[in-house]
Amino acid sequence: MPFYICEHCAFETQDPKKKICERCKSVLLLKCPYCGKPMEKTRTIYCGHCGEKLKISICPIQ
Ligand SMILES: [Zn+2]
Ligand SMILES: [Zn+2]
Image 1 (cartoon, rainbow, N blue to C red):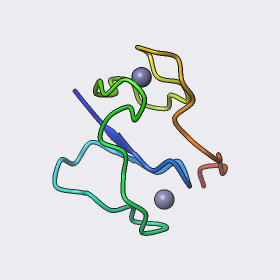
Image 2: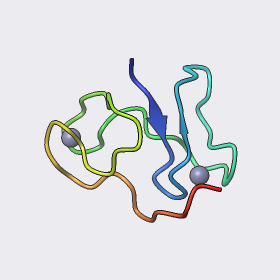
Image 3: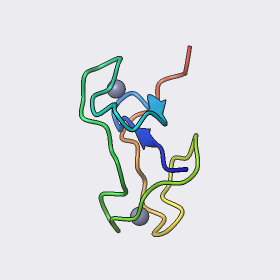
């Protein structure tokens, strides 16, 4: 199942209706910006397809 992440605060969701991060109101990443493939694993930092880093900064998840 694809999921969506916020590259700024590392918020993650699998709700396909969400386009905006609940925490910081940034646009969620729907797919890897480098290779364009959907992301398939939760809590990932690097794309499983091309290995590029997806999240700019990681805040501890409260
Ligand atoms: Zn965010
Ligand atoms: Zn990629």
